Length: 359
Ligand code: HEC
Image (cartoon, rainbow, N blue to C red; front, side, top):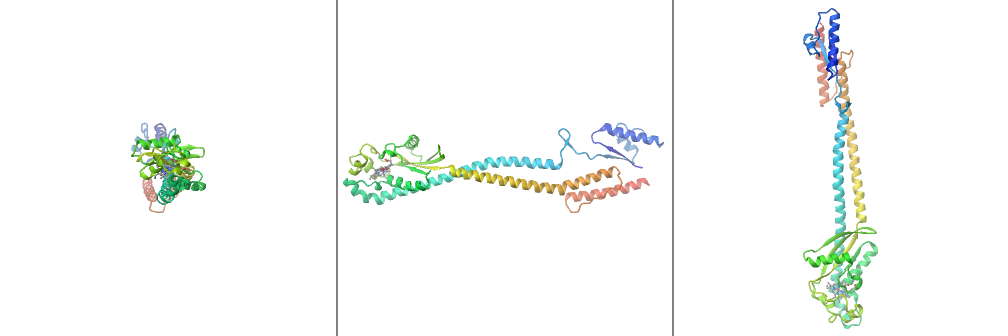
């Protein structure tokens, strides 16, 4: 007759006690008196091959003895990976979206400056010659013949539709005093005056309506025609002197940087869009993660945890010699199915070995 000893893993004393109890029982029954197998059952097993020693299927422990199942380990690993990925993606995407918004605003500003230049050019080539007789005769000055006036005035119509956009052509020594450079505009102009290699500058300013992105390009006197009205009052059209006086906007030199084109475009809306896109994207990421975790957990439960728990219960029951333990063989070809088949086969071999022993 086979005896079972249920060993709690790692508890040598309990095992030894259980073994001694069995030995005592053997002796009490008057069977050929076995001696205690020392401290554990190993000695016993040698002496009494019919003694079957089962080791309990206790869960491995984690921390202060709290069991951590496959599901917890698995979910913790996935969660850790997600948190790292989520944080990394968040930082990266936020930067990317803000950078994109900035680039987009800058691109708009460049288009505006290009359009302003087109107006300047058009005025210079087509309007100025037409107005020259009027300007020179001193009858009447035609501001429409001035490139700067044309560009700034045209832009005012654009501004009617996009109130937060501004276009200015400030100068350090302007003909029209309303074009005098403000402090920060003068800073930009001075950078251009000191460094001829710099052709474009950008800056961000905080205004009451939010962050404004400013694109600045230098205005240099490259065309000698400009000097007709901007060098000395003596050669300037009389009508110009009458309209603007003879103190401002003169003394400009050829190739000198006299002012700048300053376009300001509000960032508030593009930034808000960037933020919305960012939040939407992160929410989608979170949703996909939750979906993946749910699907993986369902898969894990049905393909691994449930069959393994069943198998381990059966293995325990079989090892303890419990009668009437049901058969379990999982259908399929995956690893767990193969394991359950192997286990069932092992169980059958064990049964036949036992019945041979009992004979
Ligand atoms: C026909 C005379 C005339 C010519 C030619 C002319 N300008 Fe002017 N310019 C003016 C007047 C007048 C103003 C002021 C316009 C206003 O009221 O906004 C002005 C304004 C400007 C301004 C804005 C700052 C300021 O002084 O008010 C800049 C910059 C400027 N001109 C550059 C140029 C350049 C560069 C050229 C050559 C491509 C040029 N101008 C040709 C008459 C002229």
